[in-house]
Image (cartoon, rainbow, N blue to C red; front, side):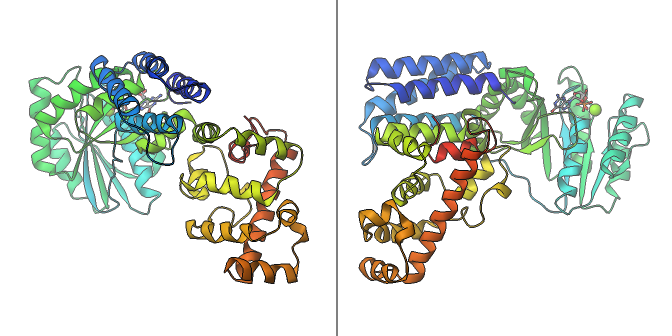
Length: 439
Ligand SMILES: Nc1nc2c(ncn2[C@@H]2O[C@H](COP(=O)(O)OP(=O)(O)O)[C@@H](O)[C@H]2O)c(=O)[nH]1
Ligand SMILES: [Mg+2]
C-alpha cells in the first residue's frame, strides 16, 4: 500500500497515546519524537517537521482540552488535524466541465502516463477527451501518447515537429476536455521555460498541472516554486506514490508552497489515479478504524466491556446505542465505510449506513424509556410495550419500530462478522472494530 512505512510509524505514535497512563510533557514529547522520526524517514523537511512538532506540543500542553474531551482524545485529535494540515489542508479539485489542461514537469515524471489517467478520469465522468502530444523533441514521445490514447479510447493529435503548431491543431478538437502533454527536460532550464510559456500563450489553459514524482521527496518544494514562477501552475499531481517511502515528504513540501495537490498517481495503469483529499489520505494512512477505536479506548475503560460482551454473544440495545454514538462524530457510517479501502457496502445491511444525527437524540430518549430487561433483550418489545415506550419518550410508535429495525440489522452485521473467518483481518474487520469487537 501507499506509504506503508509512514502509516505504520504514525499508527505506532497513536497507539502510544492510547496506552499512556498520564498525558504529561514527557509523554507528549515521546510521542512527538515518534512522529518526527516517521516523517523524517518519509523525507519530510526538517524545518516543517519541527514546526509541526511545536504546534502539537503547544496545543496539547498549552491549554486544557475542550469541554467533554479527555486529554488523550484531545491529543489524538490535535495529532490528526495537524497531520491533515501538514499533508495539505484543502482538497484539490478539478471541475467537471469543458476545459483545457496543460501538463508540465521534468522528464519521466509521469506526464504522458497521466494524460491517459486523466482521460479515463474524465471519460468515466461523462466528458469526452482529446489528447494533444506537444512533446515534439523525441519521436517516441508522440507514439507513446498515441498508444495511451488507444488504451483509453481517446482521440489523439500528435503529428509534427513544432510544439505550437501541434497545439493549434489540437485546439480544433471538439472534445470537452483537451489535455496537452508537453516535453520535459532534466532540469527546468531556459529552453524549457520558453517553450512552456509559448505553449501556454497559445493554449490558454484552464489548468496547468505540474507533475512531480513522489520519489523526489522534499525537492518537490523547489520544483513547485520554480515552475510556478515561470509558467504559473494551478495544481500539482504527485505520481509514483505507490513506489516510494518518500511520498510524505513530497506531499508536505508541495503543501508548503501553497500549491494544491489535485491528484495522486498510484501505479502505471490508467485507473491508478486518485483525487487527492488530505483528510481521507491521513485517515487511510493511520487507519480510520484504528483511530476511532483508539479514541474510544481513550474515552473510558468501559469500551472494552462492550467488546467482551459482544464476543460472548450478547449485543444489547445499550451496546448498539453506545456504538452508534461513538461513530456520530465521525460523520455518517456510510461516509466512513467509503473511507475504508476494500470494504464493500454490499455486505452491510441496507439502511444501516445512513443513521441521521437527528435520530440519535430520539433513539436516546427511546432507549431511556425502556426497562433494563427490555434493553437487555429487545425481543421482549412487542406491540403494547412499543405504545408505552413511545409515550414515555415522546416519540412515535414508528420511531420505536425503526430503532428496533436498525438494532436488528446491526446485530446481523455483528453476527456476520463473527461467523466470518476474517474478524481480525477480513473486509469486515474495520466494522467489527467499530463495534468494539476486536482490539
Ligand atoms: N509506479 C508508477 N509508475 C508510474 C506512475 N506514473 C508514471 N509511471 C511510470 O513512469 C515512467 C515515466 O512516465 P511518463 O509518463 O513517460 O513520463 P513523462 O516523461 O513525464 O511523460 C513510465 O515508465 C511510467 O509507466 C505512477 O503513478 N506509478
Ligand atoms: Mg512524456
